[in-house]
Length: 134
Image (cartoon, rainbow, N blue to C red):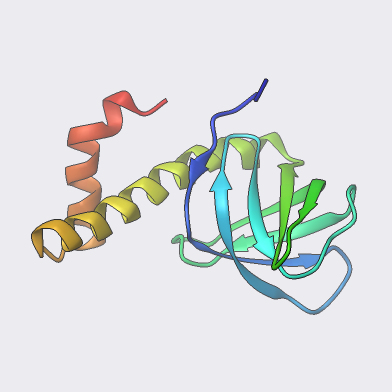
């Protein structure tokens, strides 16, 4: 049984293997209180430590995580990361909400043609949905 609820998202993530210089850019598949999942084109060995960054969050979200699983598919690989620092896990709650707000902003534009600022979208989403946020 899953320990934490996963929240789908498609926000950019940057990562590098701890101790290496080169950084890779991908998109998250989902995020939860305990970690996140992203897709890439190359398998990463479980137990590998990654330095993670989410540049679209202001201020940037930086964390360290450990690869706990890796699933290879035909055209991509899904990598499951567990946060090492429990403070990073706590900060993830804020990111989960930001993901929902960004999704809400896109949906409002698609459905209603309204172009909301980040602040307007946050205020609307919070007043409508924050009480039901798990």
